[in-house]
Length: 599
Image (cartoon, rainbow, N blue to C red; front, top):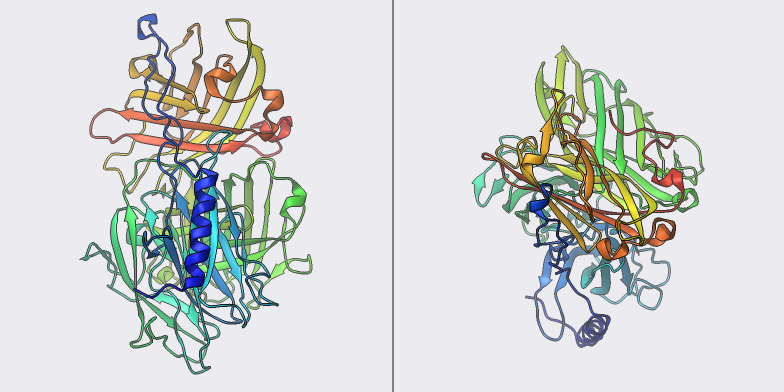
């Protein structure tokens, strides 16, 4: 264990005192409201409400619980003046999260430093010489638990070094820990080296010491390592993960490990088990086709839903946009209209003549785009040589709206192959499979009405995506429901017995009509087991029922929703919980605003 400076101890103690005074906490509410089963409808349950899983940081710990400092998290090494890219990540509580930092300003960083912590957790920039090393700074993450979010603070350590030009080694040996089924983001980097490309050494991937997979990749555990060193996807199993990463630069040098002693780097991280599926990004469809025998003949089209918390057009101006698909990476900037452009505001065209065209609608959260004239094989996606006709192939998809959200998927594409030509196809609920599961609110609408007691209330309508955890649960279907528990706001919970649901020939589950109960309850519910989309509607609920404000006053409120699906047979339980900031503007709240949900 490395030593700790007096300067660091003083700063850490100050941070710890600030955290204590600020009342950093976990969500632990367990109260609930009741609807009588004797009334022949639903039965409320106590138990957890939205966000009762403790909020926690998932970066690797450098130093654990040494007084007077709380946990210190390791960001690895960085050389002065070089570009640094890292991800600060968390889990628990209620997604989405917001990250703020203290200690990354001119009082700490030397002049000309550009290191910046984005609200999404994306850390990027450089640190100039003159900055005290190691660099310590504080990050506070807040979640979306109702109108009183949970907060959690941590101290992060970045070791700044001066390295000779001849040195070429890994800057990171442990990456962010993961959570089964949850969106994952981490980054490998090296000290020195230009044009560095990262790969996974064949047959080195293990889970708890047991070999996993037979290729040079991480797809067997639900992750992809891109050519630029980004690790993303949805982990599919828990345990200690280990593999060997290889990094080569444009001079064909092979990077040494972080200790600067042997070639290549053994990378380790932990994946914890988890029952909750929640995300800020869901891939709706992705189509990839091309020719492994020719350059510039590959193309990609994609669309998805992101939770941007009702940001305005002007908020997108200058935001970094990064698309990772398989081993390939494409990046640009968002303008105030939500279009991806280059630094001069024009079309995004890369050196190999490939072109990215994409846009995001901040009202609906729908993102769509395409890449033309790409050379995916030349961008490190050598797996394409192994595409088989009428088979399947795993690949990760990740979107990085640096200022707002990071989200990734692990998809199982349906494949076609004829000679050198190939096609990878995925469409949610139709072609291919989403392997990690997902739960995401698509839209929320509230209408002010009177409750049965004559008091002011809100009839809420929420539409959502709920994808079973394929690749994790033995039998992940959501069709055999024995009970459904709806959790909303911070006060409301209702459990509905499976006997009150019916299944249509088209695969839709819904409440048997009429489902009418006097009192606060869910009055309508429908879910398509084929399309993975659903909706629910409540009778008018008072602020006491939900702790949510009146609809007309909801411009600053966060709507929190959770579904707990208890399933029959061998199925394990399914939990989905997430938050979405709502606004009074109808177009921001409507399902049918300009673009439509997946059909």
